[in-house]
Length: 175
Image (cartoon, rainbow, N blue to C red; front, side):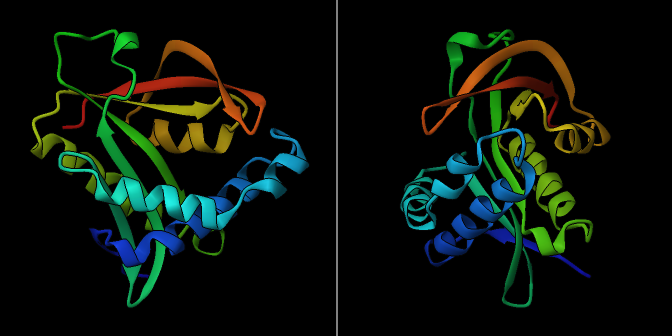
């Protein structure tokens, strides 16, 4: 399937939110409580993505599309927690979210938005990039390692609707 990548527009917010919710429900059974996954709300996520889409460059949300169908998205921004940046001498960005719609996993949509996101960050002058991944999400960690990311030794807990989920940080150069 030939995925084309473009910058997301406001009318994509609800579809991006649906992919985020469906992707989380697909990726985190047994990692996050069932009640937490069921409580994820597409409309709340859509409102949040509306704000993310309005953020100025160098922040961006990229989508992989096949015709009118959005198959995956990737959101990038300047590093959100500069106080935890181990490379203050480098201009650091963050891959904030990436999800493929579960029915298109394995078709290259996720790879397409990932690679386009890194090109965007490199083009914006970032020298270093980080991302956070749920520690128990082995599939996501394999995806990131195949794309040159490495666990950099930093870990933390991520609050998902009041439930602490352990996560680890990965990093690499965007170029």
